[in-house]
Image 1: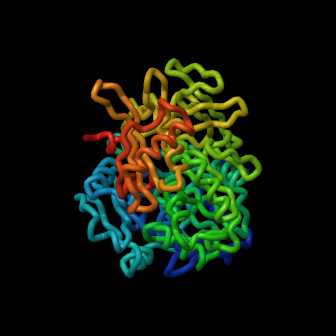
Image 2 (image 1 turned 135 degrees about the horizontal axis):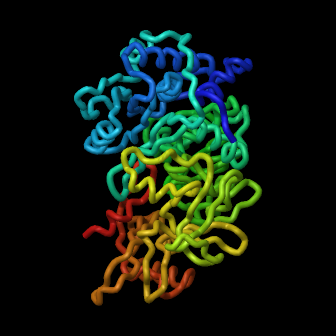
Image 3 (image 1 turned 90 degrees about the horizontal axis):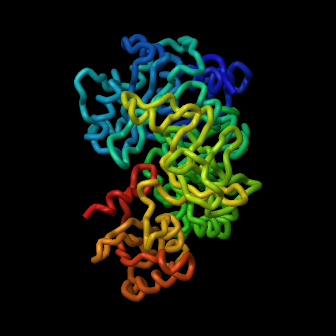
Length: 501
């Protein structure tokens, strides 16, 4: 599946040409923008980049909140052939500075509320979005600026990996990948149509949020709602009530928080809600079942990655098996392999390896990691999976997080899932910990729903609960109760921090 020309033509200009320019593309708390106005303002942004001397294949960083300004800058850069590099807005200043220097960005567009904490890097021009300065910058470009002609294989944008186990890596994606994800997951799993309204709590700087908020709605001329602030359960429910979206994209941690909110109910506040999706981490089965019971809709859980741009394994509306990541999305192939690169039999654990046209072009200036991750048509995910006899893929954990307990491999996620199924537990994370004999055993960090619980009694009850559900050797030998778990900005638990003394 290939496309000719710049991605901005298919996702944006096509709708204006075909008479859909008056449709609302994006809405944030301050304003809405139509497809026609987005086309004009992105053209102005493209022209302004040229006036600023930022040419084709150069990089500009986007440290932006989820507002209308984000698609203006993102599509405007693609229109000019400039490479946008969205940056996680919750990173430390030191990590943001690292990405600015590593990407060699010539400019950074920063949201006005974030400008005060943005690290200044010599030679990098700062453009503040959300006010008069951004309007003045757009005024330097013409709304007739044409999009540059590109190959679908030309690099369009970069996304930096979360860096949970090291320095973030610049992942280079090409123009053609955007349409591929829209015509595979967006069309065939999500089933988005022109009358849908998408609300993604996952932010647009993240691969999952970028597809949810920008490319999937824009592929069909639909609309998207932005929440600039933190997606707390209260803020999410208020957005659902106010805008009545038909589709919602969240992460497992947020779904758990929403279920604990006293105001959760049918449709999670939206009478029009018809589709809920999850990615970022595997969704515990108990959360899926409780969401179905309380909200009235299933959650389509799947797995994607920055390297593959969006979800490549997923449950579907017609085929849901909670506790699994589903089956390959049409257009993708997936295999579970051993350490020698050979497929393993069903029921055995191994590394998930995936093939699909949305795979990245490679990492920026990381040739060794590129060669290990991208091998021919196949991308090595680093995730440990089991494929069952029915073809469903079940997540076990990251390859470096699996535990060998009493000579048997134990999945931290399986233990976490068992803990979360207990009515007293809100969240849980499991890591390996050495006992007095130097042997590795599971240790659990648990967030309780009721902080006034008798913790000594509950600790023993949780251990017994896990033994009964998944096996006596898998139970956590230690349980530490905590008020929070370390996470990335995309909601992934940073288990490596829990392993530190």
